[in-house]
Image (tube, rainbow, N blue to C red; front, top):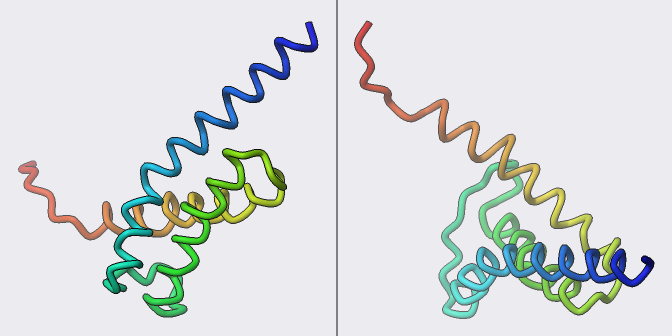
Length: 102
């Protein structure tokens, strides 16, 4: 029974980090190409926000994938996703024009 638990945790860890890497790899390639255009959802500067996001979505995802310091590596991922959900996405939805007629 213990082996099924470990296999389940392994599948969740690998699946979660693979999904995060689908967002992190394009941002990492953008960083390597020298294109630092990125939003500034927290007001700390677009470049710093971009570096922190690349660190979380690329570097920390790889750490979670290989299982090194998984709990510690999940903290930047959680913070990045909370900012994405509550700051960036909610701001975008509030500012988009709607074409609804009453």
